[in-house]
Image (cartoon, rainbow, N blue to C red; front, side, top):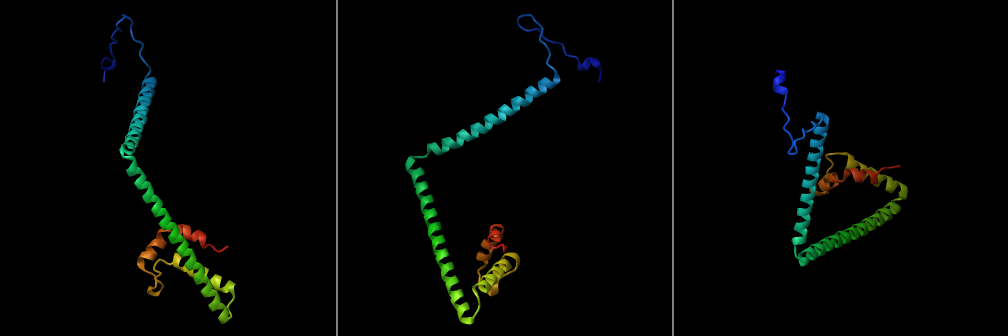
Length: 153
């Protein structure tokens, strides 16, 4: 590459003055800022489009979706209450049976914790076929949370 090929001839401005060349770093910085502004503009444009999509819905559709969410939340709340009730009832049955056999509450709790940890930590645990594979898959999805709950300390 010759020096002549890297030279550029500056074109005069309309007023006759010669333009002042910008340093390469300044030009690169300016280009980077322009790209950043363009990316921000595109992100804002996408956000506005998603908001327009929501605002384009009739209010009755928006409220219907809200009602569906409220119904689903109520159903999950009811399920949680039913689950807690069944857990308390099963605990009472376990304690009654343990008392009849002379086993202390601490021993029952320790055995329950050991079983819970076994289910959480043994990958092929099937409990003798008493737990459906879908239930074990559900437990597997929440193992990290459940391990915190059943940590003995």
